Image 1 (cartoon, one colour):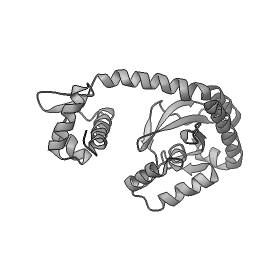
Image 2 (cartoon, rainbow, N blue to C red):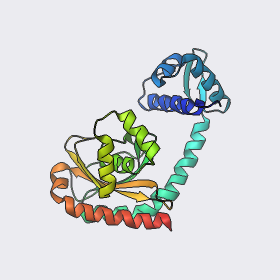
Image 3 (cartoon, rainbow, N blue to C red):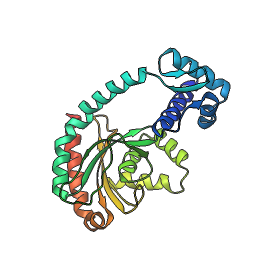
Image 4 (tube, rainbow, N blue to C red):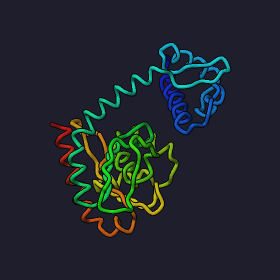
Length: 243
């Protein structure tokens, strides 16, 4: 592919995946090109190349959808993520949830979003926070996303900041990285709060974020206790990742 074409192709796939996830119905090549900010002629050419590799499929009415090859690739990716990130964290997360009485989440970077890889729900409260596995959310919103964003490589972090367009975000992410944790309230779900810490891989890069979340009235009142518990649990998972 020519220079820049790969980025545009990835953008087209991402937009197509978002549309499928939101069940917005069939999309034409022209509509997809507009959403991705790609010239229609370029979109046709890139999608034709992607179709040859089974990554997209185009119908006679000029609509386009994700291809079947992505199903196989997705299953391989899911199995690898489970082995590499989820299994080493599973027991620690269960112990953390029991210790603090709140739901624990493992979140990883996914483009400009955070994606939930594993959830351990607390059984100590009837009112608790619950997210579906593989739920995605903007990385610059909420503790689980912001802790990942703060530890991105500089170029990726700059791209996120530019895309988010929120004044003060770059400075906030720098502060989070310096603190080594983040607390947020009401950024993803009204009435909910969370505290998160980073988990780094062998190279010192962000592998995932560990967070606990629940109703803001319970979380806000025990920030110091939660910080200690979440940070200690993240460090235990980190040692397992780096072993």
